[in-house]
Length: 72
Image (cartoon, one colour):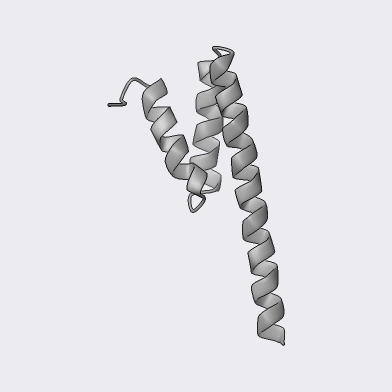
């Protein structure tokens, strides 16, 4: 029972991280649309640093590379 409780807590914590990463990613996209590339880059870096295991981290790396002129 204790293991189940630990797994449940861990799952909820990770889900919360993913939600925050998603929120930051969407905000960064909005900042790009508003031509605020500096702030968008800051938000993408925050995703990469704080949520490296999130699926949004890879997307953030791609967008950051584009913003910095390193994209394909």
